[in-house]
Image 1 (tube, helix red, strand yellow):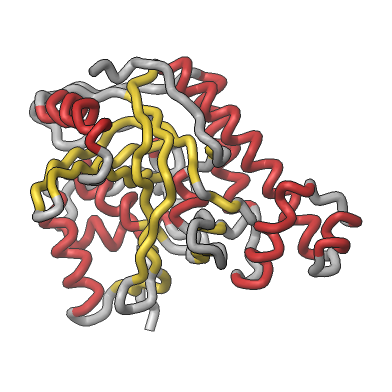
Image 2 (image 1 turned 120 degrees about the vertical axis):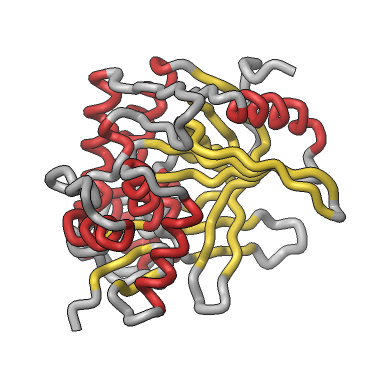
Length: 317
């Protein structure tokens, strides 16, 4: 089965959203009816049942369980990581997933576009872990990726504008309409404003600027190296809010790399887990060693703090 076949669009609109905005979301919304669709509402008020996402494949895993075979992929866009799952209950997609997995195992790196249904679960400590259950996916070229970046930037800007208007508007359907918020964004924005605290929308505006810069420059580089464990999308693959200002000293220990990455990249919200792991990989450390070191720094002495799920700061106390 070819992964370059045309992609269909179903009944629920596939919203274009960057990884950063979706990763920050902690508000699942389920309709009251038995067959009502479920949503994940982002801080910018995107009400996501399905999303159209795109990025370079960064990891691939095939699993066997009592339920059957499943696959997990990570795709990196310019703002972070999209977590994609192909469940045992979607066998029609398994040949495509098998082909993608085999190519990744051979060392091939390429850009994928996925239509996925949002899914989430809450951890014991209250964190919300988000991912997508793939419905369709295919390989795309750099030009298509650049188009997705531009379209997603436009959609994000529209939500940023709606959020800024909502800050001073009456928190009601009529109040948001009077403030000029588009009707299709009002429901999600009302839910978001009731759930999330106020924040500076510049954190997502930086994502937009980063995406447009990459799209205009067509600066998408696929690293195809059989000896490398990681793939990159040029320098833009690290979120602008967490990218260090200067290269980190190559002589640092693994723990020091983690500390230095957080120190250099923290712009007020901390540094996300994927950025830390990626920086450790650049310095030659395995993902498992990096994950163990993060856990050690967090629990043994508390040198770093996970102030919200998946985001880390240095412990200043």
